Amino acid sequence: MNSPSTSSGNASYLMALDAGTGSIRAVIFSLEGQQIAVGQAEWQHNPLADVPGSMEFDLHKNWQLTCQCIRQALAAANLPASAIAAVAACSMREGIVLYDKSGEPLWACANVDSRASREVSELKEIHHGEFEREAYLHSGQTLALGAMPRLLWLAHHRPDIYRRAATLTMISDWLAYMLTGELAVDPSNAGTTGMLSLETRNWHPELLELAGLRADILSPVLETGTRLGSVTALSAEQCGLKAGTPVGMGGGDVQLGSLGLGLVHAGQTAVLGGSFWQQVVNLPRPVTDPQMNIRINPHVIPGMAQAECISFFTGSTMRWFRDAFCSEEKLLAERLGVDTYSLLEEMAARVPAGSWGVMPIFSDAMHFKNWYHAAPSFINLSIDPQKCNKQTLFRALEENAAIVSACNLDLIAEFSGVNASSLVFAGGGSKGKLWSQILSDVTGKPVKVPQVKEATALGCAIAAGVAAGLYRSLAETGEALVRWEREYQPNAAHHEGYMAQKTHWQAVYADQLTLVDSGLTTSMWKAPGL
Image (cartoon, rainbow, N blue to C red; front, side):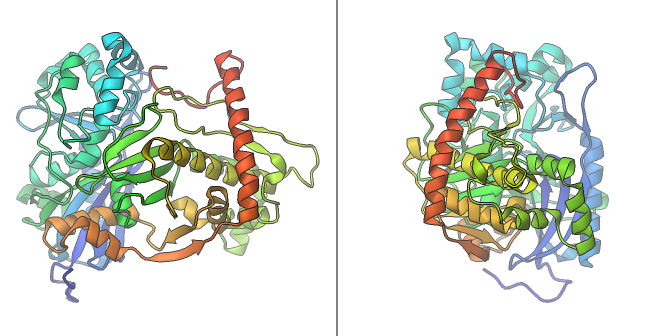
C-alpha cells in the first residue's frame, strides 16, 4: 500500500457513499483506514396510498441529500475536494433503479418494498412450481426479495414505466452513475436480484425469459474495485467533489462490510448485529442449499460466495424493550452519562446463564423458501419477581439472539461443510460486552470484536482505493486495515447449558408456529407470496 501524504491539499483520502435502508452517509477515510468525517441524512421513501407494501425511492430528492452529505463530510473534515483520491458507493441490497434509453432514471424502489406479493405467487407456479428452485440453483436467491416480481408488478400495473425501461441497476450503481454518467452493476449487489449466476458472476437472462420478462435491460457487470469512470463537471458542481476524481465500483452493504472486517478467506464467519442480524460465512466455492433455507450471495472477492442468514428485528426488538419497559433505566443512564443498554447489560449480568428458562419468541432461524415468524412473545415466565423481571427478560433477549445465530450457522454448516473456528462480531450489537460473551458461550467459539464501527463504509472506501490504484487488492487491504478491540473465549459450562436451551427453544418455536397456522396468533413477519 502507498503511504498517504500528510498534506490535506494532496489526494490522500477516500470517500464512501453508504446508502442504507434509512439514510445516506458520506464517510471520509484516510488511506490507513481511519475514519475522518461523516455527513448523514435520512432518505425519502414514498409509500403509495393505493399500493400496499410499496416503498418508492425518491431519486431526485435523494440525490440532493447525497450531495448535501458529501459537502457536509468535506466541511467536517476541513478538506478541499482535491483531497479526495477516489470515491465508491455501496447500498442496501435488493433496491433497484430503472433508466430510459437516454440514461434518465425513471423509477426506483427500496429493499423494503413488498408490493409484489401476488407476482411472487405467480412466479412460484411457473413450471409446476419448479421455477423458484431453478432460480435459486443459479442465483442463490428465492423470489420473495428479488427483482423479478417487482418487474412483473410494473409490467402489470405501470406498463408505461416498464415499456420505457432500458437499463436496470442497484441503488449503489445509481449513485455511481450520478457521479460519472456510466451505468454498470457489480456481482455482490446485483446478485440479490435473483437474476445473476453465482458461477459466472454475470447475468442469467434465461431466468427473465422463463418469467415472461424482458432480458434486454441488463447492465454491464464490473467487479468491485474496478474503475467505473470519473466525477463529471456537472456532478462536481452539484455535490462539491472535484471533476475528474476516480469513481470505483462499490457493492452490497454486507459483502463490503465483510471486506472491511477482513473476512476475505474461505471459512471466515461473522455475525453482524444491527436492526436485523446477519450471519455470513465465506464459502470456498459457490454452492446452494438443497433445502433452500439459506441465501447465497457473490462476495466482493472474485470467485468467492457467501452464505447469509438473517435474524429479523433483533436490534429493533431490543430497542422496543428499552423504550417500552425501561423508562427508569433510561432516565438513570442519562443522569449517569452512560448508555442505557450498558446499564441494562450491567443489570442482566447478575442473572444466571439461561435466564431462569425464559424463552423469547421473536425471530426464527432462516427458512428462505417458506419463511414466516411466530407471534412475538415470551414463553416460560414465572410470577417470581426475583427471577422474572426486566433484567431477566433483557438477558433472555440477548441469549435468544445468540441462539438464533447459532441455529443459522448450523444450517450453513449442514450443507456447506464450513464450521468456523471463530466468529467476528460487528455492528451495534457488538458494543455489548455481555452480548459478546453470550454469543461466544452459545456458539462455543471465540468471538473477536473489531475496532472499526463502520465496516461497510470502510470496505467501500477500500474498493475506491483499489480502483484508483492506491491499494493492490481488495483482500490484501481488508486484512491489512482491520484492527481488533476485544476477544472473548467460551465458558464451557455455559455452552453445555445453552446447547440444551437451543434444542428446547427450537421445539417451542415450532409449536408457536402452529398457532399462526391455525389463525389464533399473528405472525411477526411473513415473506411476500406466502
